[in-house]
Image 1 (cartoon, helix red, strand yellow):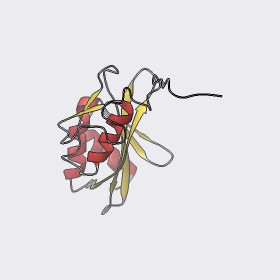
Image 2 (cartoon, one colour):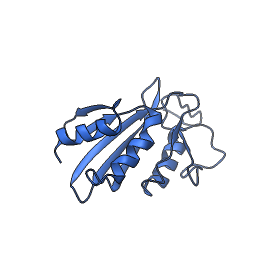
Image 3 (tube, one colour):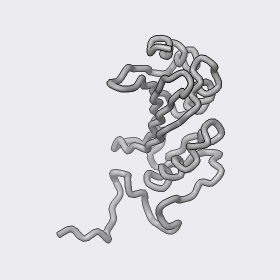
Image 4 (tube, rainbow, N blue to C red):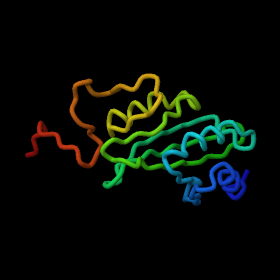
Length: 151
């Protein structure tokens, strides 16, 4: 499936998606409440068969937080990036994709720990790197660590 065909398929699943060709990946940007349904269709369709989520990254855009998902079809040999933004930076929440790709379980916990994005219906939403009593999320641009000594 070439990028033009993949774009048409993505838009058939989610007409509001914004799809662009990047230097390396085709990228689909969708509203946060549309990610789960799109991901489920991309995984379940025999035409797309995205059976592997190989990267999930949190992002702090300054005025908003978001997540970037990198997908691959190991059988059909195509890749895709899905981007979304949380509607509320103060209480960022997205739906988990653990029910679609098992690899997201630890990756979502990492994003929760370092960015503070919660994932609805995640089976084990707790910090993965930092202590449970840690205050703040170190990869957010507004994070301040008063214990760091700068010389």
